[in-house]
Amino acid sequence: MLLLNGPNLGRLGVREPDVYGALSYADLVEAGARWGSELGLEVEVRQTDDETELVHWLHEAVDTRTDVVLNPAAFTHYSYALRDAAAQVTKGGLRLVEVHISNPYAREEFRHLSVVGPVATGTVAGFGFDSYRLALIALAG
Ligand code: DQA
Image (cartoon, rainbow, N blue to C red; front, side, top):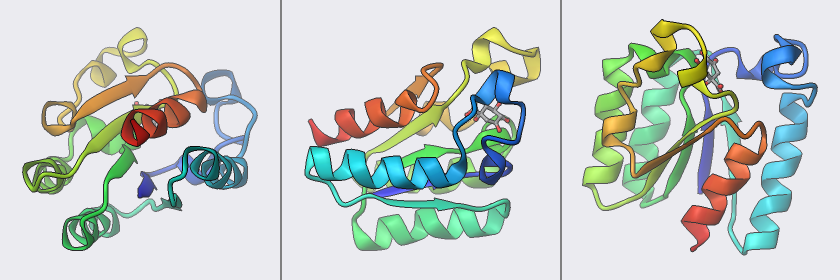
């Protein structure tokens, strides 16, 4: 499956460690592969700051019949293009789990809205890097 990450998540470890923790994006790539092998899943971790690229990766998931773990980062809150691409995944019979490292509902008000959540299979938020692991467990089950 694809474990996709949106803007600024390549800066994990450097970016606001009080919010997102001390682990880096490289640590996430390594953890994704490890959790995947523990769960018997092939997990490919990607990150982009580019909305177009992220939309195209969701099209790829539809075309290759691949489930998705998606941390849309700030696109969560306003990208209708990403929402429409995510809807193609779930309406195509695939599963897409929206993931957040932090708990957006416990933060600034603009983070309380997810435009992706209503078209996701489910959402995991607030458990640090474990949010990704919990999403993979859900998809493996
Ligand atoms: C985030 C939460 C978003 O509000 C924020 O814009 C991010 C990261 C998270 O993983 O907690 O970039 O998606």
